Image (tube, rainbow, N blue to C red; front, top):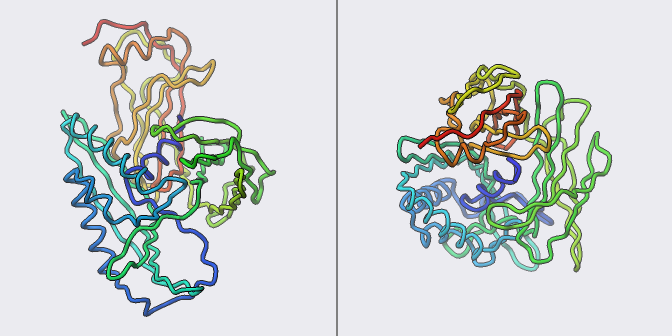
Length: 362
């Protein structure tokens, strides 16, 4: 699974990551009947429910017809239950900090009038357990619909969740394009068009942590994509199609240089320390680091550590028997350190090493 698909899973399964959908016949409504305070109060209630691992309360802000990238309200309910059960078994402490950055109220005037609120929501999430800590920040655009006296999350009302992320390796920029869905008739491919990009079909298949299928491709671009550039995903189904626009939200221009181990080093024994340069203060909307260990010959991931906080620039790899077994390779491998922003854009530093044979670690 790619770093992108994991990010999509986390956002859609846990948080109210509700991308905006099109607004036909929508008009701006200063007096649409809502106040930003109501939205902030709703986010605080959701925060309390998540931190208390209360699945019924966490799902209560969702509308009955909620739909986000093919995932229904019941799908999110199952995701909450699974995630909360894992946290309980791990005896982890969960902290969630939602920040409502902007609220725009509007209404749709068609056969009937419906009131909506588009919310720029940023969420900081942190888990602590047994001396370990994992944290990240995520941008979660949220769409609410008024139902009587309450606001409910209605999702993007499309069957496929599409994402565009900009990557940078210190030399080249690359677009990662992914379409993911829990919809039963999700197609085996999608087409993406946009500036500086020949039409590209997403053909590489996989399944995320929830078992939902996705298709993805990467495309190198000649120059850094400008913020606001829009790309169109064309997703066909057996009974119609969807055109879903996604815009560039930024880029991470500074790579976290790997300080240890040295390039092309032969690692003599476990455990292995990976240390890198801290770039978090220089990255706008920084989220977290990730460390990957991959085989050079086929790019297979042997080890992945996600959601490393901004104040941590060193990890230990191969300290346990399961880790050593997973990393048993005795062939040239590549260590990768990623710096991600809260929109999922990333930079990556890489260095090649040769890993030792498995050790008798506890």
